[in-house]
Image: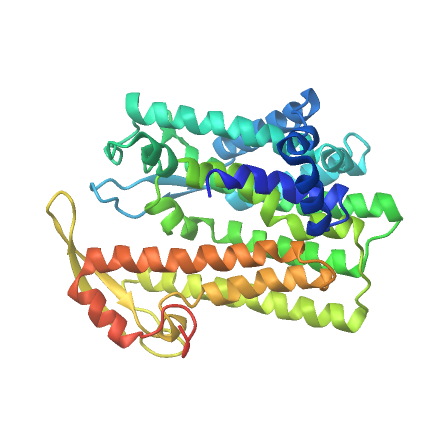
Length: 415
């Protein structure tokens, strides 16, 4: 995947913008022209592309450092460290969108410029983010930020999976929060707005399909930043190290692939009609809410140490003990009721459905808009398996007891 990802992220853009969204046309071109054809169509990073990336990245880094926020402690790491964060993501999100829309409204900067140089921007991100990951690898060797770092002895694996769990610049600038949240997830919202404005500039109006797509993606990203402190407890931050897999993925894959249904709709406007558009919108918002409520339920359960109400009653739970790498014995509570009694990773179901509902406004004329839904499904099913394997290793017999009580991994009654 590490080898294919740069090509796929570029070819996705090229097919949507230059081949009318047709995978067949792009495949035919590459079949006829081979590697030379791929090199010829690959846009070279330009000065304006680098300027856009630098200004955006610097702006988000400044917001991350300077905006006030509540002090939040992350989960205790395997070596006993507890990272501390400043929870100002929601404020950064609103400042970012307000600034971006303000620049457009007052004629200072047009988001259409971002769309017009998108190929060059993605190309610059592909190469620039690779260099960034190399620097992260070197930092992990020569200047790790904490004891949650180390090498497995294989250079390729260390580079791909990462050297450090919590890399930081200085004391306050968390690199994974920047790459995953403030650059990656924030770019999702910025590009959703960009595609909407570009369609308006092309056609003099915005189609209802684009409105549904844009609104649902913005609702989802708003939900993410509302819940950002909860995200810092997830596998991405608390268990996966900062390497090519996570950091390059968030810097390149998220803006180029996750936003692609909107990219497709720029040149393929669909008029759904008010009734169908509302049905899709309501279904999408409901799925986003359920996904949020799953995370909220577990977060509240953890915050109160199980002394809370789940669906109107006391939660059922399993008390599990485990041993840290330092030899200390710790205790965790595993929730077995509410959404978490339906399946061990039920929250992935509404997340996949949310992606489907903001993609389906494109209808089914082309396959490409659904690439993200398919990718997300594979990603989350793999993540569920990895998380189960990690928990089985961590909790031992208690995890077996948990699985006997919550039988299904993701889809209740099926899987």
